[in-house]
Image 1 (cartoon, helix red, strand yellow):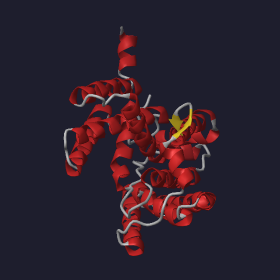
Image 2 (cartoon, helix red, strand yellow; image 1 turned 120 degrees about the vertical axis):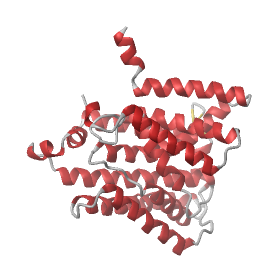
Image 3 (cartoon, one colour; image 1 turned 90 degrees about the vertical axis):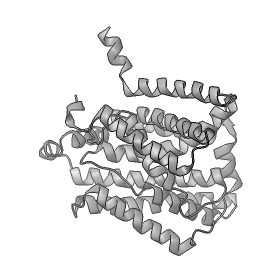
Image 4 (cartoon, one colour; image 1 turned 90 degrees about the horizontal axis):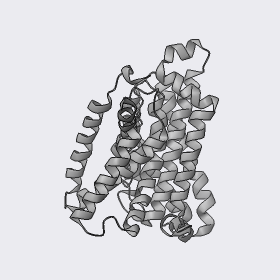
Length: 318
């Protein structure tokens, strides 16, 4: 019985159970909510959030209260850069991908250097970077839609690609597989857990703590950039603040997936389930006509509840 209870308390099991419960609730409130087409649309939106949360997951796993608040700004900037480089043509897709990945990596590198070399707390460093990005976007575009997605990108994100599933869902599953292998089967992944569990012990063991932490922020920027490209394909065009909606949910998805903000424990599979759960919750809130401010309040309260439920301290680290 104790084994069954321990299994039921697993974050992934809780997330899946709540997902089913929310789907049933949504179907009750609005018949057709749990239909196949609607679930597919929800999975596309969840994939966008899940890709952003992949980088967030890595930064949080690295410990030292690591949080990347700049992901929303990187998503917005990448969507604008991709839209202008593509300009509605398929030929511009490779250049747009390379350009956006480089932009995301650059801002992630700056974040990593600020946190490691200048010893600026991650919360402060990435919040400052978010302000820089928001100011840059206002100066460059002034809130006006900019650029246009290539037709092939839009089809990849929204249309069936293989076995009836859009390409973005297959991309998300590939990222999930890569993340699982990275965290569980590579030296780099083991170093992330070691640093997140006890940074001083990892340093004494000869692990290049600064290099690994910088790499985590770079990867966070890259994943946010990839999400920005996909978001452009989903919406067709981009606004200056289009990525702001992913900052808080990306953190909630990670925490709900079983990764405490103290780091050192957790994984990406639970984060994927958390992303699906949050998207379904958001859809239900939209169905009952709760506006954006109300949804943000619900997300903030959800994060507080999760912090109380899963805790922040090292006691959770087995």
